[in-house]
Length: 65
Image 1: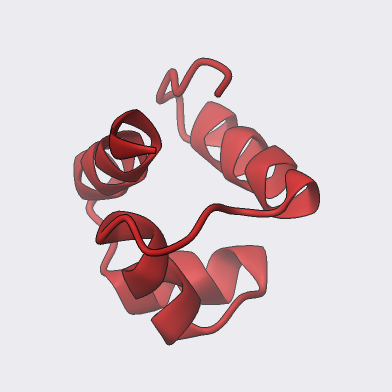
Image 2 (image 1 turned 45 degrees about the vertical axis):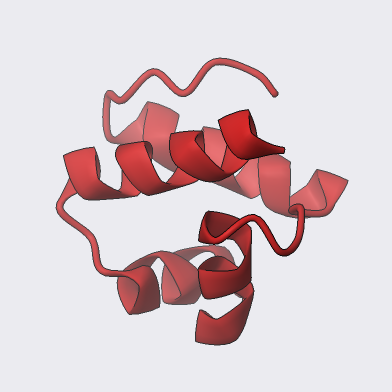
């Protein structure tokens, strides 16, 4: 899970988004993004797809987790 939490944080920062921006864009709560980034939870399959779609739209390669 370390890898996933770091990936979400790194990609979010590369995009120039706050945690709140990312949460709003993929339709989850701010606390959910915070939990992902501090290794307290893992995105659902749907949330992972949304993350991948969003980062690809922005030209940021997130790879698959």
